Amino acid sequence: MAALRTTSRLARGFKVSPASLRRSYATVQPASKTPKTKEPALDKEAKTKTFQIYRWNPDEPTQKPKMQSYTLDLNKTGPMMLDALIRIKNEMDPTLTFRRSCREGICGSCAMNIDGVNTLACLCRIPTDTAKESRIYPLPHTYVVKDLVPDLTQFYKQYRSIKPYLQRDTPPPDGREYRQSKEDRKKLDGLYECILCACCSTSCPSYWWNSEQYLGPAVLLQSYRWIADSRDERTEARKDALNNSMSLYRCHTILNCSRTCPKGLNPALAIAEIKKSMAFT
Image (cartoon, rainbow, N blue to C red; front, side, top):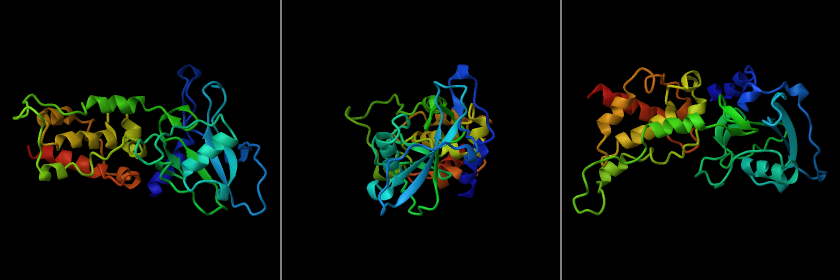
């Protein structure tokens, strides 16, 4: 877990990209320069907590990213980090920008770095320690579209490259559906549940260094999901596409991916299974 908490510190060293790119790396100004926001009056019995949130506006490309403080009464806020973000946006600062949709850990939209850990805001409980500020950043080592919104263009481009769908030429015997035994179906457990939130890939140092060529844990887990599917007829072609020095073998078993997955999946094991299947064929 300590490895994950270094991501916010590592991000401090980066510079904002040129204005022409309309993007920014997840960098911040020192906390001492953090601006304060106007906050609503708090009750005397309020249980207050401060949230430090990463801000960057592409419409002001000359302005460096900064951390902005918001204070909420936890007695009037839902239990999850996403509840706090929504309340801040609705009641305090409508310019705060972040992705969210299902609020149930299904869509993966609200992936971000919270207190040094990549997770889903809708599944992350607000720490009850009110003396300690919570710090919220976009996913590390990604270009930033705005505030907490990461640019996942490259991530989805890599996902498309593995052809994540059933491929076969042989029609089903009865012309109706492709059947699968219970045993073969069970092999897909821990794979099909991936929601492509990118928490694992953006926690991986190997992916930070080689994101243009190394596919990363999320995409490789998805690749193994189809390699392991008994209904698919392109197993060898899928493995051949990974059989180079970069796509698969940049994984150095750091295991950040398995530690941070908000769905409790094990991308490192899926990668190991791909390597094993390629070694013995």
